[in-house]
Length: 447
Ligand code: SF4
Image 1: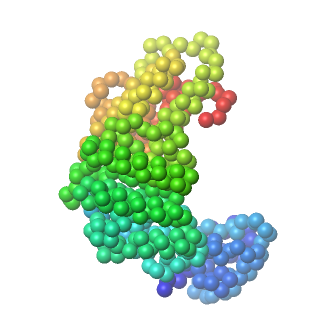
Image 2: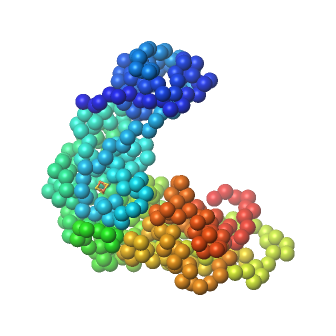
Image 3: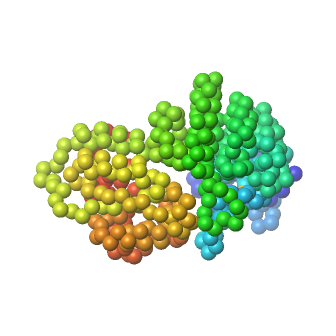
């Protein structure tokens, strides 16, 4: 049984159907059309009709409100966020457990909530998902979900997630598939635990879910120097073996299904020293948030931009002059690709003098080589060590969160003050080129 505490309204648009019906901020919606409401998903699901009978609670008193709206008219309500359900696993590879103490609290939140999986694409393991919740997911068509599988062998999964409820994953996935729910999956490869035959079996089991499985990403485990559990990183030989096996299975599955469902994270190709697949491999990039196709997207974006730049006439009187170069900061893993792009940018415009700096991650340890986990402190130290006066510093957007802070709490302004240089964040290849060039691009085409 779900606990029905209702849904508290945060704001009401005055001219909306809710405003006209007299709903107010602070009211708690208890039922819609006689059905209990626990969260926004319930509310959206029950709000399909034009006339809604709603039971609310205001200052402890229950009352009924009727809302009438025109077809297509927005209901006009915003709600307070509900508390996310927390994960009860103790995964051997958990990145949150591998973080140092003292960072902001939000970084230690381990949510395991199918609502956030659906709304934000957060991965969940389904270990804490009850049968009633699975039923609700099916009833309300909460699809697609993002599910961390790691291993389908019950004993292996239970051991990796250190949760006695972890072994029923295939039953749960079949139940979801039968109910018409689609899902994206991920497998984090931990050498000695779920590589070799376990990985092959896991992939086989998942690909058998012809209707349910939309995509599956195979990702190498990320290890920081703060880990307490003894785990080995994926080395080059293992990366080569996994790349060959996964590519073979993925190609066969694509032929059978008509589209690719099994993908390798960019990091696997880099670790293996193998070339990245072409644009077509990634189809519509269903696993980009998992580091699948990020580098390819970057390279393709540059190729498209270069075509536009060639059509751009050079402005009269423009000279590169003797300007200091801009410094493009990146991580170890992106360095080879970014160096090529930046060299091509510098060659294609006399105004884009740029150099690349690959920052070693001292905060989490050198085994962490992705840009999204670079910290302000490491960047400041690395730039200072160059002992060069740079025209400006350009940081990857992935190291700054939506509030404008790095993992260790630096804002761009604070980094700029510490370095005594202008600091920018590039969200795209175009922005990178514009910051490097020191002026906006005038292009007619669209990227
Ligand atoms: S499910 Fe995710 S957050 Fe929870 S312990 Fe495992 S890795 Fe960590």
